[in-house]
Amino acid sequence: MTYTQTSDPTIREYVQAWQKLDVDEQLALFWFIYKEMGGAITPAAPGASTVSPEIAEGLFNQVKELNHEQQLQLQRDLIRGVDNQISREYGSLSDTTKLLFWYRLAQGMENTTIVPMPPNYQLSSQTKQLLDKIKALSFEKQINLFRDYISPMGAEPKAGAEI
Image 1 (cartoon, rainbow, N blue to C red):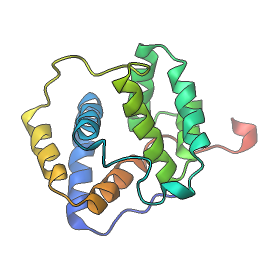
Image 2: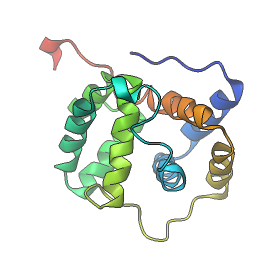
Image 3: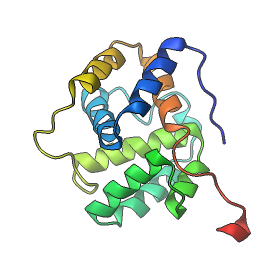
């Protein structure tokens, strides 16, 4: 796995706080971050130019083919590290490609090709506080935070014969 956690103690603290949330609240936080900062958190994120966007797009297209309930379950499975084909494919991606994949999911939620957020969804006060802390970080620290959060998701890839 390509996961390397940043040495910044604030980012580690925020990642751990995010990971302790209920899985659906974790997904909601991701959505609210995208809504607040989607213009800045784009495929132009550091290193994205070296990524093959086709890889993230291919995985996104697999998710897009699922019905909305299956899409939601898959996102939950990625967070929980459930071992399934898409989760293993995700686990084999570089961190930057993972960022691009989640960005594409958020875009899909916005245009409803991916299960959208329920209308009028309200974050818990604990999650809202975390969102406010994340919004106060510099762009570079936000990217490091997202990378540290999404990196360990998914399942370990398996050798060819085990797939």
